[in-house]
Length: 91
Image (cartoon, rainbow, N blue to C red; front, side):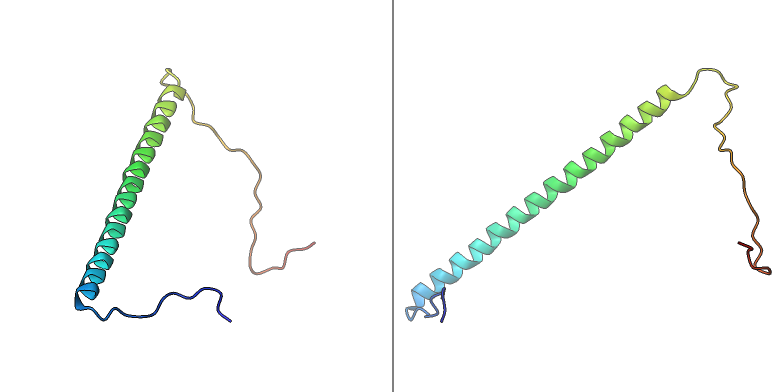
């Protein structure tokens, strides 16, 4: 039992066939152009968004830098243990 069935008959009139072919090709062309426009808008918008984000990040780094030239860089402190492959680790 089929709930939905598309009409599968072909037109016998050559003019109707040519017209349906032209309409189909035009519809494919419109969809292609619409897809390219959407892709272009997304590409340009993404590029602008990334550029704006990079510009804001550069401004934030410029403001956070202290004016004094002798400022020390931040240091990450911690302990370390050297592990050797020769001996198993005692638990």
